[in-house]
Length: 448
Ligand code: SF4
Ligand code: SF4
Image (cartoon, rainbow, N blue to C red; front, side, top):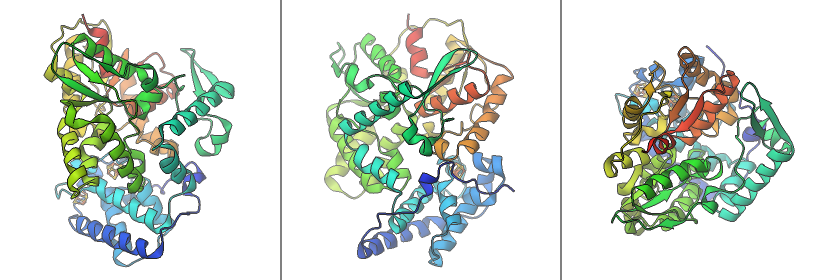
C-alpha cells in the first residue's frame, strides 16, 4: 500500500491563517458537521468505490478511496478530533472526479462530502494565504484577473520556455515568482496575448428566434479562445443570435472545491447577472466542469433563497453543453475528415450527453478508434495536477499508454482542463504529433 502523496508545493499546505471569529466559526461548523454526518451515515462500506477510483487504482491506499476517506472524516467529526495533517491530506488528495458517487449503490454524494469537509477545514483552520488571495482578490475582479494573467504571460515570454521535441512546439512556463508554487516542470500552456472575452464579438443577431448566452470559463478565455471562436463560428453559420457577456467571471469551481463557499456564491451571482438566463433560451458552455458548476452547484449554493433561487433555477434549466446544443438545434451537413481520432471522456461530463454524441460524431466523420481506457480520468482534476503532479501524471499515463498502442492523429475531448493535462501527458510521452482538440473545433472544421 502506497503512502499518501505529499503535495508537490509546500505553499498549499502552509500554516493556515484567516480563522473566522469564534462564534461564527462555531455556528458554521455545527451546520456543516450535521449535514456531513447525515451523508456519511449512508455509506454501507461495500467497497464498490474501490473499483472506479483512479487514485485507489494507482496507490491501493484505503485511506484514499471514498470508503476510507468517509470513515476517517466521520471518526474525526464524531470524536471532535483535532485536525491532523493526515486528515487534511486525505480530504485534499482527491480529484473530485465523482466516479465513486456515480457508482455508489447507497447513493452517497461523495463529492459533496469532500467539498463540505474541505469547507469545514477551511472554517476551522482558514485558507492558505495564496488561495485566499486568489479566490477573494483575483477571481471576482475581472480587471485584476486579466492583469495577473498578463503578468503570467509576460513571465512566460521573458523567463521560461523550451523547445519540446520532436514537433518543435514551444512550451512556455510561468514566471520565477511562482516557481515555489508550480515548479519548472509544470504544464501551463502558453497564455494568449488577449483573453477571448476581449477579442471575440460580444453579440450577434441571427435570423433565427433562438437566443443564446455563451459562458466562457477561465481556460477557454485565457488559454484556449479558439474553442470560443469555433462555438461562435458555428452559431453564426446557423443564424443563431448570441451574447458573450464581457462581465462574466470564473464559474467558481476552484473556490467551491477548496472550501471557500462564500467566494463561490459571490461568483455565481455575478455570473447569473451577466448571463441573464431569464432573457435567453440557452446558456451554452464548452467546458464540462463549468457546465456542471452552473447546473448542479449553483442551485445548491442558493437553495432556499427565493429571489436568487428563481434566477438560479432559470439558469439550471437552460445550461447546455455545446455538443448537446448542436444536436438539438442545428443540422449542418458535415464533411468526412481523413484523420484518425479517439475520444477522452471528461469526468465532469456526467451532467450531459456529450460523450455519446461526440463518439457518434467521430464515428460518422472520421476514422474513429476506440481504446479500452477512453473513460479513464486523465489525472488533471484542476488544481490537483499542480498539487500532486507525480500522482496526476501516473494516473494519466495509463490512458496514454493504451492510446499509444494504436496511435491516432487527433485526441478529442470536451473539457479544456482535460486538454491541458492530455497535451502535457502526450508531450511527456514524446507523442506531440497527436493533436489534442475540443469536439467543437473538430465539428467546426468539418462544416461543409
Ligand atoms: S460505494 Fe458508496 S456505500 Fe460503498 S463504500 Fe463506497 S461510498 Fe460507501
Ligand atoms: S472523487 Fe474520484 S478521486 Fe476522489 S475518492 Fe471519488 S473516485 Fe476517488
